[in-house]
Image 1 (spheres, helix red, strand yellow):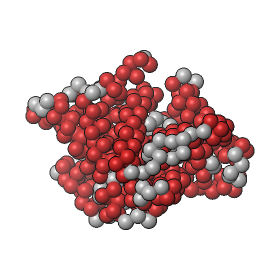
Image 2 (spheres, one colour):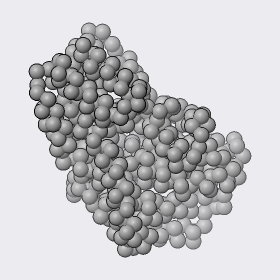
Image 3 (cartoon, helix red, strand yellow):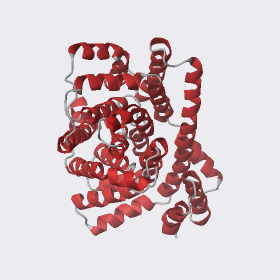
Image 4 (spheres, rainbow, N blue to C red):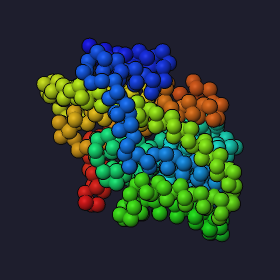
Length: 425
């Protein structure tokens, strides 16, 4: 009966197109009535309790900061700076896309915002330079998920809350994986540009680099302020998110003057819609996770897997496959809140560090965001750039394979994630 309530019912509802939050609420209420002796009013307590976390305030604030940076000229200045530096390298435009997405990810943490901001600025130039629209959209779609991996990352914040881990330490663990992803993508696009015979651009000129650096000074200060403040112990990640909002608004309105107060207010309203969508899923997933935890299902799963006697490497492989499948269907916040109570005890039982497992979860869900056929970034890119989904599916395959290779490396070499944490401690 419990398997039917916790798994069969939600999967069936999702298959017929039921919204995620409604699916989780139906499963929670059904489980309480059929399996538990708790009153239905406990659902309200669990829903509001899941939102009553100081660290969770960082999610809407980073989303707002990312939207302001995208619309206030900050993202554009970053791209201009990267292009002025790598302009003479074969593959300079794709490299600029990857570099800009990485820096943007260090400021916002919102993948869809990165796809929209970076894509709108780089896609026209990629097409004109002979890379083709499908490659350009695929590159932006796959590169946008770097925001999920490079801190500050919204899924990392939610995992830290669900698994009761330090947000700051989880951010530290994500630095090296994010750099590895960006480096691997950069190597691929350079090789592809050479094989495709794309000509090199004009070599970088000192005057152009200096001019672009002067224009982007305020943009470059943003990640230094945010990450330096967090790792320096000046403020918490949640406070850093608030500072990022204020900083980006001041720079966009008063310094760059590319955003009016009316534009700023519209950006706040647009961001609030996305925040509301995320938070209602977080609250429903919190109630669902509470029911799963109180039902004793995680303990039962741990005992069952322990009886199977799987070696750690095989267990991690199975968990990776599960996370990839779930990540291609559910948004990362919902997937983490549903799966973290189930999978974290299993990984801990196998001796996997919770911070290391958090990076494994995050990278899996990042890949799931552009994994055909249901990845969120695929649909976002399809809606924004009007690219046919079948062509986009084929275009992201090389990037998908690169990410899978990196996932295996990060899964089985935990030092890549845990070494920065050990140094920090």
